[in-house]
Length: 449
Image (cartoon, rainbow, N blue to C red; front, side, top):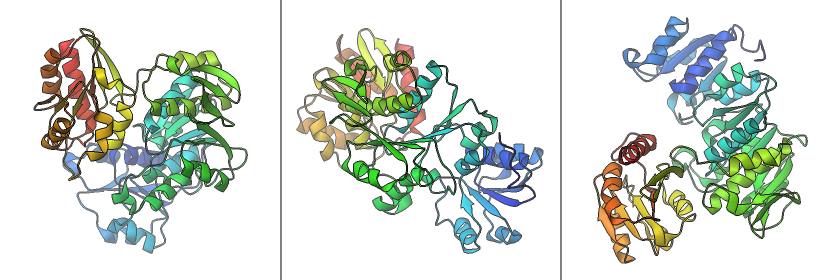
């Protein structure tokens, strides 16, 4: 870790705890800052706040007093999930207190180069692929950022021979000032998080900030399957490295079922372990990073031919008496389920779907469902999904939850079939998180196995 003096004896407010706030508070405390943490959870229920207090950090819990900001803070480090129209954030901005997220801290202290990955879909899979490929080649990489490992905590322990492979959300990127990855990836840009950003333009602008401090010595990997990403390639100072499944580009591409990087044959598409066109794109992005880091093709193949998927993201669980089972609990919207379905033969596929009813219908999903062998529906949206299935003459069964869905559908299936949990809905009608939903599905699979 770089021993910077930027924050020494400066009063800094960390707004919001959870993993990232805890990591940021500890790092700032170690750097000699006078840290105050403000979190909404009551102190008696707040394990992180209790730990920080024992470590000598001032904590204020249970509410967010606006007059706290009268204490002449030099900086606010905001939890990424806290919106900019939050009263505490608005008051900080009105007082000209800089507001950042902890990925900025990570950049300031990191001795290791940063590979940053953002985009709407595929971030976690691409981030994990990149880290696995680098590690397979003997290049030490550390996962960090939005993938569940707070960037500032990982950066504080990294050395110059490491690489930080950092998943970055739009929320995190809105809070950067000098942050600059050596290599950046934008997987794709679709509509998302409009409740936070207010518009698609604002959301895409937040994503685009990943490259704002990059120079021609840095590399920006863009998805040329999307016209908007292709158009953005002329609006950056970074050296652009494109990837595409549709055309030959000066980067990673597919031609006649084969994957190349700048005319060098890497592997056949059919060798990829993960199914689906979207995962071909993820693999191309990872290959582009790998070749920029001079990784051997042997190391690339060792990962891409065996990678079973990130937990809850089109994760291959194994077989139940000849039936292949996949856990895609992360598919909390129709687009994610469409991408999952694209990787399978519908004539052998049983889809398990349902969850929170946000008021939308499933008309846009219908073309992707045609020819399914069957569906099991559950949760608040079960009636809507049942109507959709019946409209398409797909055999449909109603179940209570993801566990009973797997148990009850097995007798209807036969060897060679595929069972896919890809809910197309958020989990909050029955579960706290999509992880909890997926964990129950995994536990049921293990029990049945």
